[in-house]
Amino acid sequence: MLRALTVGFLVVGLGGAAIAADVPSGPLAAPVAVPGGFDWTGFYFGAQVGAGWGSSSWTTPSTRYSIDWDQRGFFGGLHAGYNRQVGAFVLGVQGDVDFAGLDGDKRDVNYNVRFKTDQNWLASIDLRAGWALDRTLIYGIGGAAFTTASHSIANLSGVPSHQYDGNRIGWNLGGGAEYALDPKWSLRAEYRYTDFGKADFAQVQMGSGVVYAHDYSVRAQTVRAGVSYHF
Image (cartoon, rainbow, N blue to C red; front, side, top):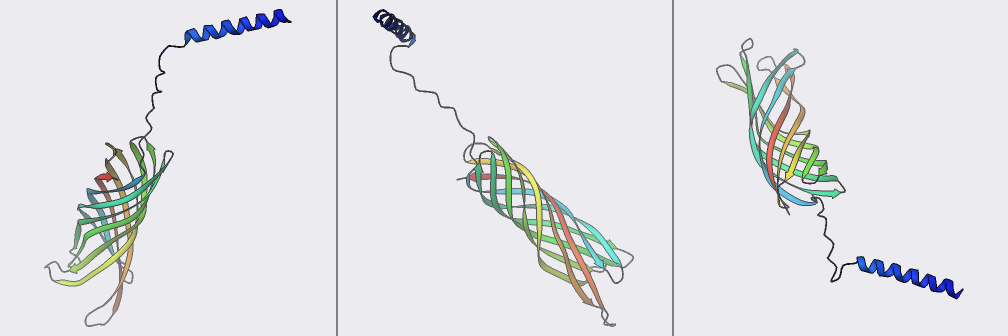
């Protein structure tokens, strides 16, 4: 029994000495920290510029008259929002407003009439949801859209006959990508489709007193580039 204990102590002692010989002398070096991914959580605001194209249509159901025309132009404005990142998933809310010049018109020589649409501003309140690949965020965006559309009808000589101005509420849907240059600044590129639906109007024809019902619709597609500052 004594001999077995003696042999055991010798084995443990020799093993400990061997392990101690492999341990470097002096203070141990601190472990090297592995940097984490970029965090998109927080408030931000920024500016954007873009171009848009779309179409308007005018319909008089009682006479089956219908006409479409294109709109084009540029816009620029501001945006602000908040992101919350959980893992790689990013969810946020954003609002933006743009001063726009999306205009278009069409002449119908058969009826001696010219239709024209002007949109001077665009705005939206949206949800953003995306997937973060470190400094790159791929996202979808969608929500409520707002504008004021001005529709005018005149003869081909320029004499106006009707003017319809009204605030319009619709929806927009799109997607984009954003890249963080550093913890404070990011760049983005984005596409959206916007539909403001139809608006109905009644017109009383001079002389006959006949009431005609009309409706017009406004749709637009936009591409934009922006820069954001993150708090």
